[in-house]
Length: 120
Image (cartoon, rainbow, N blue to C red; front, side, top):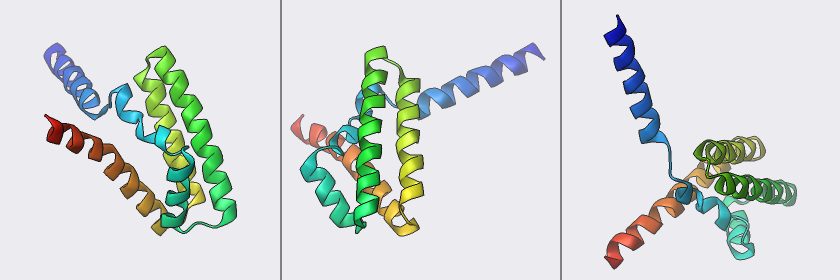
């Protein structure tokens, strides 16, 4: 029985480690508060003025939460900041806009890796 419990704990820990991101991988959220990036995102998502204001507020709060996570070197706090961003963005955007938003985040996150691979 002890062996089964130990195996389950090890399996659970390895799954969580594989799914968690390094603190540096959350930098895509910092780009969202850049004025040019934000304006391009607003145009791409085709949001109205009220949605744009709400997104701007959420992106600002996300950046503050990520700064706190980096200061504490806490991946848990960074994960919470990401979930805060995604959850609130989902409540503001319609289904199609949110889908586009997720695509932008994923492309932005992984484009840095491609640039690094090309430069090596």
